[in-house]
Amino acid sequence: MIWENTKLLLGLLYRPVSSMGRIVDEGHWLYAAVVVAALSMVFHTTVTSLIYNNYEAVYREFTPAEQARARAVAEEAGYEEDLQLPTHTYDQYPLPLVGQRAWWFVSFSAPGFFSAVLGMAILYIPFLILLVAMAGANLSFGVLLRRDYGPLLTCGLMAWAAAHLPFALAGLGLAPLGLSEKTALGLWAVSAICFGLLMALGLRMLLGINYTKAILLVSVAAISFSIQAKLFATVSPLLFSPCLLIYAYGTVRGGIGNIGSSLRQRQGFRRSMEAATINPRDANAHYQLGLIYQYRRQYAEAISRFEKAVQIDHEETDAHFQLGRIAREQGRLQDAINHFGVVLEQDDKHAHSEIWREVGATYLAASMFSDAKEPLEKFIERRAYDPEGLYHYGKTLEHLEQRDEAREVFARCVEAVKTLPSYHYREQRKWDKLARDRLSARQTA
Image (tube, rainbow, N blue to C red; front, top):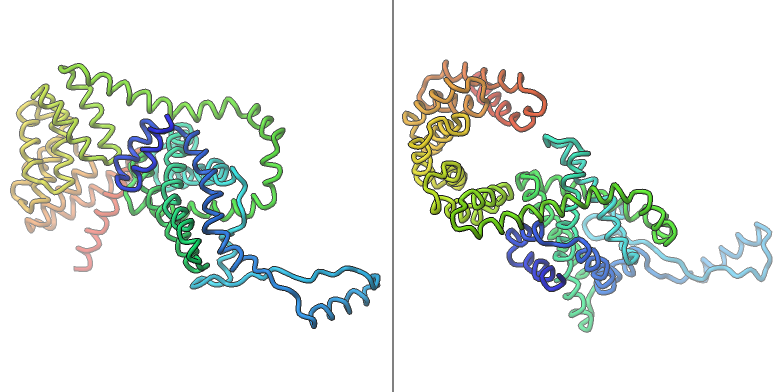
């Protein structure tokens, strides 16, 4: 288990996409937690301690004038003459570029052994899941927490370790050469950026969020690290009390078990699918694995699985359909048309007739507007209130100079999104925005 997880951790440094997917399938949170705890101490010793000693708490002895003023104040207050007054203090200097206000958000004081792990587990990951729920997920915070907390925590811990490992080693290697505090600050900043990018990748893979949105959510969630720095400075002695930890575990043991089971269920399902692919005639097992990879945006692996399913059974319509969708997303429009053509030959009502929408959208992307019109018309006849189909149809009519008809279709798209149930609205509202943009552009033209 240790060697396999070490390979997964190191894989994040040179093959982050595939390694993050394997972490979800095979990673162990306990290994990641121990590595983060140990690495946080090494990182502080080699990097952040320099920032702390040279910026956050800089030792300075009192000048004779300051000592005399302190003595005078003590005498006026009635203290005894032999009172021992402090001879030094610790000053806080402004950080480069961001100044003194940076200390509202960051701290480089020495961490406790498990403070990085606890901060991730009880603050950062729950806050990130809350942001995902607020940002348009189709599931509530409670459902997301139960379903994704375990996998996301494992990915987060692995991402933290992978992001900080090279810079901890760099600090260790540069120490004999006299690592400066500014260089140390640069190492810390780059490690934080690397962690954010890896975390965004994990968020995108687990929850299907696009990179831009994932990076934004990860950046906002970083506020929890500021809370952690101030909270743990006050309550960390209590958090590390063995009696309190034992009591807390006994109190919430059931909830922890339910949350942790989400990771075990994902990994168990993945292993079952892999085992099923041993059967050389089981095209569906490859198809199901392809769907998992496709959801995670691991398109190379998804294409491989779908193609394997098609090789086993050429009439695996679903696999052809998904290969066409991936090809369209990747801009391989002719490949998409070829796969969609096979689907139409086998079932022209496939996926509730969505095959016609995909064909029309592919021709639209290829600027073949006349060819796009017929399949989109056929789809709208069958699915009159599908926002995506209406938007593509409106765009096609607009390019064919049928502007009045296009305006009407865009208005129908807006109305279709309005009437959707709340659990569908969030995933379809982008078509509402796009249609409104087109309507506004027509009014200002």
